[in-house]
Image (cartoon, rainbow over all chains, first blue to last red; front, side, top):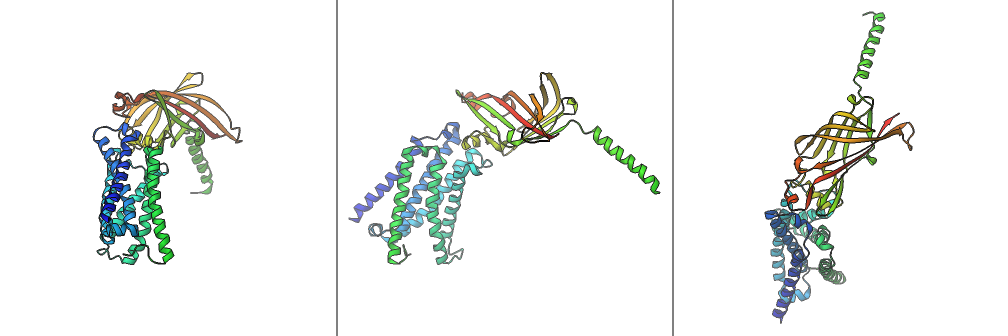
Length: 212
Length: 200
């Protein structure tokens, strides 16, 4: 029976990712109209990398929550392993996204300042994602005590979940349309609700929400 | 040196200093009222007009209609301050496709001569430095008037308005790609509207 659930859940995740990745093609940004050749290709690739990163962040939080049902279906040890692997892909997609969208506009022409606040939020998200990945993969080499690492890793991770969503919803006019807003909003609220339920149960039972 | 020689020497010195400062003072100096000084532009986008402005610029102005030889305009525009109301479009305008603001952060217009064209119109000839190249350019400014500032006693306000048609491609603002695609026009209407202040 868990095998069926595994297939169903994996298929649901793939459908969500596919739906999100369809957004830049279906709701094309006007920025693309003014790009040609390599610049246009890079910008399109950058958009896909960005949305992939967001979907992987949602998945990352689900893997971190490790609800009872998920643990029963996939196995707690597997979920931890997937979480580590997925973290590397999140960092890779986020860094690729930043490079692919910034290079066509010129690295010296960075979107800085108040009127570019969604891009600045994106820069903060990228910083935290890289920090989370580096501090996790090199925790031993960096001599970071586990308790301190975990105390910082969790809030930073949930911060990334929130800020990445804000970044995506406000950085591109593709997300000014109802469909894309609803999709991203629904995915974010679903993940946040699952985290809320898990957190509530942990507090009620007075135990850590996801023992390592 | 005796004290009796000191006084005449001091008078002579002050006479020279004051005389020289009067001689080289040039025309009256005016200060830009930043809240009421604007550099607007308008350019075609396919069928519509896109309007924008440069929000950060300075003006060093010496002006006296009776002393045009001693009058001068010096505009320094911060390219980063361009605002068309859409941040992403502003960013595109700052990119290499148009202003390349990272390499050329300022546009400077410095007058070389001012001619009275009659009917309060002044032809301000000078050099425009944009994207590292310098071009001759004449800005026609109409002096709208000079009077005591209605809101600030003891201060005079003068007003200038002027507009020109600016061929952006002839001045290196863009390589013609978007013009050839029929998207962005090459002729830019520039409208400069200024209020300047001076002590009475």
